[in-house]
Amino acid sequence: QVQVVESGGGLAQAGGSLRLSCAASGNISIINVMGWYRQNPGKRRELVADITSGGSTNFADSVKGRFTISRDGAKKTVYLQMNGLKPEDTGVYYCKAISIYLSQGTQVTYWGQGTQVTVSS
Image (tube, rainbow, N blue to C red; front, top):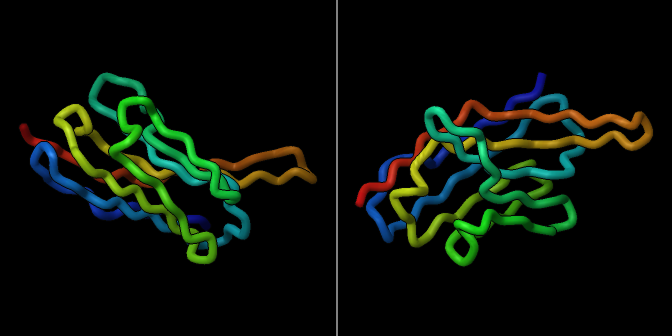
């Protein structure tokens, strides 16, 4: 079994900061990509940021310059530092971990249960 657990969500004022953490555990030996997605009611889940095992990062345009993402490969943990928060950053933030098995030509995606982030104006 594999578990992906997020923490660090909560309530913040506009202009404030929050730090999200996500840890993967269980029967998972390789994590190639870890990332954060955001979803609001009635809307599609959208990428916020992700990071590869090599350290390459990718950010949604709306968060560039305000959010940073980092990971601790040994701990299978990824962090999202959110600064300069805006009300539109509100949503449920989900952590995603991807394991790629090249020899088998497959990949497996794991999702966390999500953590609520609410930014008040």
